[in-house]
Image (cartoon, rainbow, N blue to C red):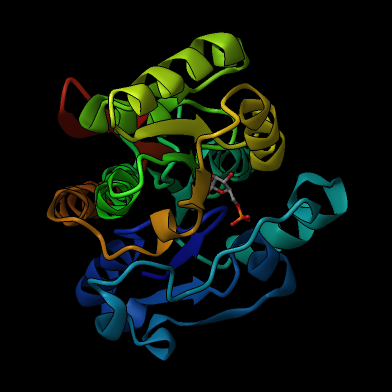
Length: 290
Ligand code: F6P
């Protein structure tokens, strides 16, 4: 049995644990594409042992390297990738929505594929949880908890920008835990008169403020310069949590999920289903055939 593993899109904490679990189970029967679908097109396929998965099992990142690959969406690129994928009995794909599209396309051409939802954004339609989300949210909350004591010492206002591309799940979860003075998770939340009123009131009451804003709504510079015109005497600082969300050591929750996801992959590899996806619904992890 020959298995191929690839990771596509943003790396996510917990990904390395799955990679290690697969290596432990399949040893010399598993290969990895270096750099996702790009690696598949270019035939950058090596024995998984080359990537030393044991060394990275509890770390964030992606030891087999990930990539974003537009070429795989073209007919020419896809054909090249398909040719290499067909050399394997099963292909395991770790990634988000875009990767699921690639998985479906390969399966439709006769490649057995197991798709695994792995992205901090938690935006994979077929699963209520995608690996890495818990760690990403924790990284944001930790940043807030570690920065605000200093802001409190000066009654400052700090604006925290969190990732999530165009999805608001990270921003929402962070707000649920930390209870910011303002949450801007979508364009409609950009109510400067309301936000400035809260910030001014806190300042008057000898307090600091903090705001959580999701990336890709308004540039942080623009947000701060607009707010500044309305709260002139208050010092505003900014912190972009950014890739700390992806680089933070996976939480116990994500490591446990990675183990659950791995068991589903093992199960799928034993079946003849052309396309299976690891799915979480109602808190339960299971395998869904497509
Ligand atoms: O999809 C995961 C994610 O971290 C998004 O939240 C973010 O917008 C994007 O990837 C950043 O990608 P890159 O690391 O390529 O800049």
